[in-house]
Image 1 (cartoon, rainbow, N blue to C red):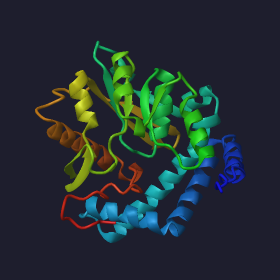
Image 2 (cartoon, rainbow, N blue to C red; image 1 turned 45 degrees about the vertical axis):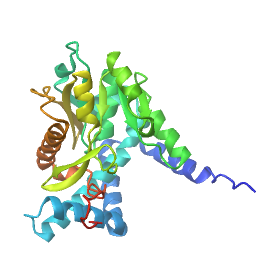
Image 3 (cartoon, rainbow, N blue to C red; image 1 turned 180 degrees about the horizontal axis):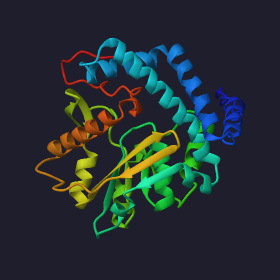
Length: 294
């Protein structure tokens, strides 16, 4: 006997409630997000421990009290960014253009080379992605959600503007390469632990971190420009900072290029540590013989 698929109505009800939130003014939405974040910190024991473990590894110079305070601020920033997604999914384009400012847009100007937009995992990542799709067609990678209702919602939100080419993480990079050769910039998020496959262990805050090498290999294969993209949550919305293309990249080896990427991301995290995605098990994959950290 085949198993029935799970009922869709609970997720649909939640989506309906989220839809109602996009009518709120930003201060009210942020206040609600702050309360939600404090609740998540109180009840989310597993993710709270993941965040605190990450912060102990990356900021050993802080006291435990300072790390707890930083983790609390991160949960608030994370929850606010999550509720802000209701705006990205349903608010009119004109409202988003008022809420999301962009700096350095001139760095997107093509010079005949493919472009990789390096977008680290700050909480404002989705706002940056929405802004980028409003500026230009692009290609990006997404992770399938387990719940089909949320998977449809996330995909529809990413497809609102300019019809970007979205690739499932399971597809590999062939279509990304083809799209970049056709002139589309690649909005790429390469700073998560996806296991040891196609990864090297390079330091992140001094801790060996399994880091995928596709970023460096794509740059070498296509002689691509690297344009960093940092999205900061602000009281007024978000600021997307497009920085000048990297000089002397790619370098001497894939490992050194991957190390440079981690060093760059680390420097950006130190600018706004509460907004980096500490809920992810960044150090889950360990070098052979090393103990688990979570």
